[in-house]
Image 1 (cartoon, rainbow, N blue to C red):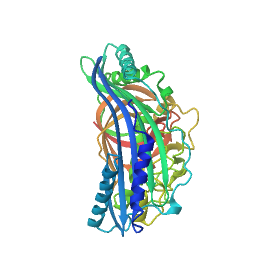
Image 2 (image 1 turned 30 degrees about the horizontal axis):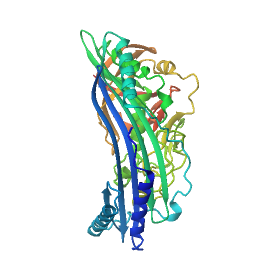
Image 3 (image 1 turned 180 degrees about the vertical axis):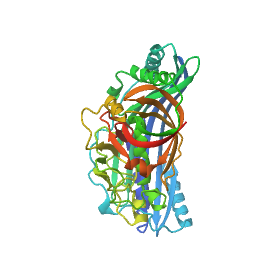
Image 4 (image 1 turned 180 degrees about the horizontal axis):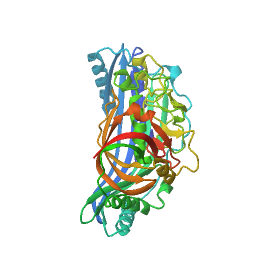
Length: 445
């Protein structure tokens, strides 16, 4: 990857903006600067389809004065460009309406001693080496079966440095690396064409020692759908595999996040302190996990998040609030201006023996969901309708693949009907969970 500008240039630019603002004691300023470099490759059937090797940098300037705010972006470290961007932000602020919730954090809210989270692990790969990684993934995919071919491999490498500062004395930087690799497989027989994929992400290069497994998993997932049969509509127990169980966590996160709450657009709007899931379930946030994909020492307001239960023994115990959202709701900011930290769904009833095979036994007879499509979620009412595919299971044994069905229900009812969480944990992005068993859902063929 290309070298970034020096951190010194970024810091000097931020200092220049803070100094400009010192002339106006009645005006607050927050500056968010970043420098990023990345390499993205797409390979398909041995041919390099796209290659983007980029470096970029930029600064966002926000000013606040008498309840009004203005923002401007600039992609230059030249003092004149910075001054012009600052003046533009000030001009915008003068033209906007007053918003009592706008403004930077009070000094006592700011994170003064950020935790070290080990989020930066450089990987000095040459472009030719990155292409070779993609070829290894694709070769493993295509060697898996004569019924499977590559529908594309993607490799991304990125590094970013940020600096957040304001006129209340907050001045903190961070460095992060993020690497991702994925493959899409096309499986064919005389009757069906089926596509599926597998993707993995990490901050650490050593996570990718055996990249061939990415291609193999994509091939396995696609080929298994070739052996499919029709399913009659009905109400059945449903087991979400870990990857798709994450969508349930995602819906909770949406419903307890600031915008949905202050816009009165959440089915969990008035549920704080009330049971929303069975008492054996907990949802824990830990934004301080070393190397975590959703770890951060402070949010976009400069406020530290915390380790806490969002759902404790089935009861909703907390919201995810930025500073602005907290002010709109007359609540305290939770340090979630960047979203949720690392979230883990767990059950006090889960044991070491609750493997994926054991969860199939608990399902007994019903639908195993391994793929979801669409966004048929009404966050206000909780109504749920999504296209799905997976496998019909009978007496704990997979019988055949099922495609083109629709799952429907209500999120509040679904969450209340979670019977078990498996020990087959999987982490992707901010979420970690095992497979999740729901007692009954409507399945329409």
